[in-house]
Length: 218
Image (cartoon, rainbow, N blue to C red; front, top):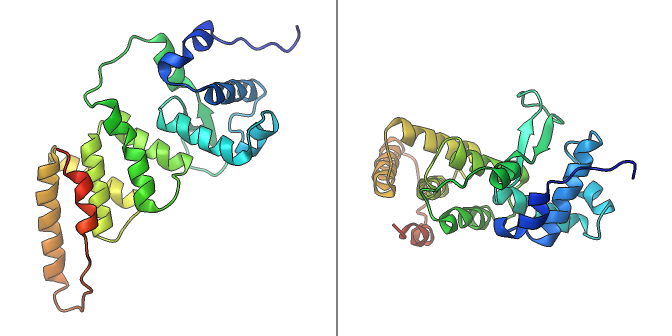
């Protein structure tokens, strides 16, 4: 019985109530074990070696746990350095042992954010990008609809990156913008100002009709 690890009974008996699939549960247990061994940021390849899942499948499972806000990435000493990251299961324990908190937004609005970003970026999101979205939602309490609006603005401006989207959200918060309609009006004025400043430069007209439909859900 040497080398045992202690797993909360609530996790084993209540994982389905949190929407955790069996493969996700196995991955959580492996993360728990890796952490007990001192490896706080195992790679998908390392997890794959201990399971029957492929490295690619492990990457997808980790992304899914991050999207479901059951896992997060932290900095060990709060400094942004390569190799300074670690996985934290604190969000999982919080959901297992704390009283449920009523959310302002329906869960589907949050869940739809991640596929939307992947659609616009044309690739799967990295764990850090998923954590970035979770920070906007949880720590900065940004509305999902406004995050979608900021993504739209980044697409329209041809600056599709997370730093630019973050700048948009911070600017809107500073200006007291709280609705998608206010964001649209602000974005329209900003683009008009940009057009006026660049009126002497040749421009290529861009068809932006594709980016309107997914914001018509107010």
